[in-house]
Structure formats: structure tokens, C-alpha cells
Image 1 (cartoon, rainbow, N blue to C red):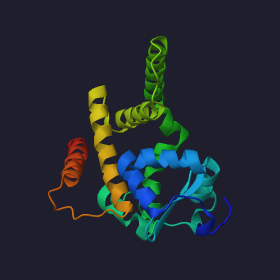
Image 2 (image 1 turned 90 degrees about the vertical axis):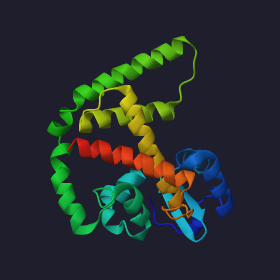
Image 3 (image 1 turned 180 degrees about the vertical axis):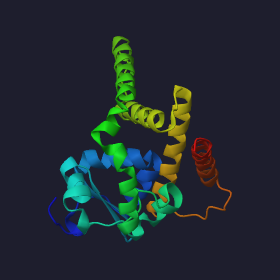
Image 4 (image 1 turned 90 degrees about the horizontal axis):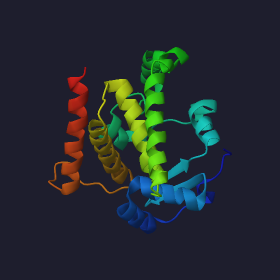
Amino acid sequence: MTNISLITIPGPGTWQNLNGLRQQGFLGYIQNLWKIYGDVFRLQIGKRSLVFAIHPENVRQVNITNRQNYDKLHSYDIVRRYLLGNGLLASTGELWRRQRQLMSPFYTPRGVQAYAEIMLRDGARLFERWGKLANEARPVEIGEEMTFVTASIILKAMFSMETNEAVIGMKNAVEAIIGFTASHQAGIVLPLWLPTRVNHQYKSARQVVHTYIIERR
């Protein structure tokens, strides 16, 4: 990805973004912006700009090839507070290096091979499900389908979660947390102690995730 000014990156204005996020949710709205603007676009909320680089080569440049030029500074504060804490995905500097070293055995070919059976089994189930939907002439919501199979593989590999009901429950909880965090990234910030419906949904979803992880330590 070439170095370009934020001014030259396409994207809608603040009010259109706020309306789109409210009506479509974060992931749905970002998907629509990608269809309209392509692999690089800007989400402008007031004075804050979020730049999305979707193409795999752009992702590679940011995360691998030229990663020394990118850092997770104050724009990640809300992610750390509401979503990830100071874990591997949100940490930086020496803390990130220590965490990455601890996680490295899981990303070797041998480590990934241990999850191959789960991936193959869930892939086969997905293939069978799509075959049935095709025979019934029913549409496939590809985003929802791929989100589910990804969540299923991760949860089964990391937490030995087996039933589809448990996977769906955890997926919904994580999506609720991500949506809450995204709305705060967009500048829609209300104190967590306020007894609003959104705050209650976030705290309930967070409790589901934290309880499950703590019980399996």
C-alpha cells in the first residue's frame, strides 16, 4: 500500500457514517463501504478517522512487511478497555514480543496440525449443510456461515466446546462485545454504569465470555 494522505482516501462523512452504523451495525456497514469504495477507505467520525485496508497485501504490509511503521497507540485504548485487555492483539512493544513468544508454538506447522481434524470435520459439515440448502433452493448468507464455522473451529480447538448451541451462544456474546466496542470507537460513548439497554447487553455478554474462560483455566 503506497503512502497516501488521509485526504485522498475515499469515504463518507460523519453523519452518513453515524446513520449507517446505527442502521446496519458495525460489521454490516463496513462490508457495504468495502463494496462501494474498494480495499482502502476511511470511516470519518468527527475529528477521528479510521482507515480500513482490506486487501491481503495491505494487511501483510501493516502486520509483517513494514510493521515497524505502525503501532497500536491511543486508537486501541477503547479496544483494550472493552474487548481485549492487554492481550496479544492489542499489546505493543516489549509486552507484545513476550506474548508473541509465548504463543509461537501454537502457530508452527506442528501446532496447526493438531487442529487439522477439527478443521476438516467442520469443513465437511459446512459442505453438507450448503448442499442441503442448494437442493432446497435456499440462499446462503455467506458472512453468517463463515463467521459460524470460524467461531466453531476456534472454540473447539481452544476450549473444547462441542455443541452447536454452545458455539452459537458464545459467538453471539462475542459479536455483542465487538459491536459495543465498535460503537465506542465511532465516538458514541456513554458511561458503562448507566443502566441502558446497550450497556446491559454488553455486560451480560462479557460475563458469558469471562465465566466460560475462567471455568476452563
